[in-house]
Length: 142
Image (cartoon, rainbow, N blue to C red; front, top):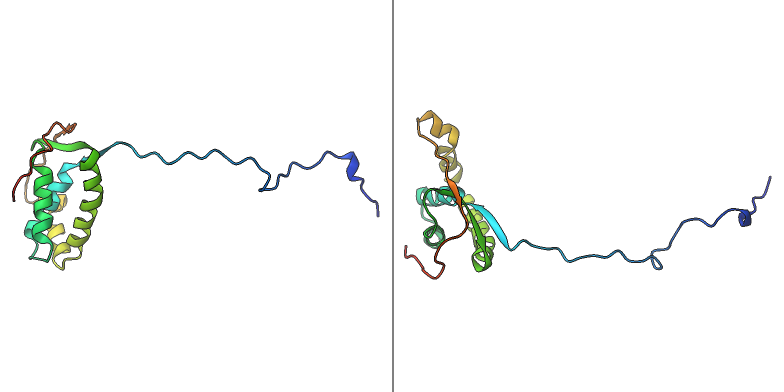
């Protein structure tokens, strides 16, 4: 057997983790705005109206009603920022989760399906987008 002399070869390019230069890690950046589908909120509002009463139903309906009130009816998308964005990110997923737990939800959802609506001859509209030109200081009663 031959013995290899390690002195004639360059040292390996192996660096131990403890001596390696750490990669620069930047904190994850979150955009300061969120584009939301107002049409989805309007559908959720209709779904909540069609469901049998459940414990948080009136609060859920009021939140969606108040959230939608400042936006023009002809807009399907909106750009939200600040407290409105944070509130949406916290509250809306919880509303959807409660709504989906209701026993009538699958049936009501299917009744509102675009395929079902097409069969009934309903027209679909296409709306624009708003950039949040609304008065956030006003609360709208239910």
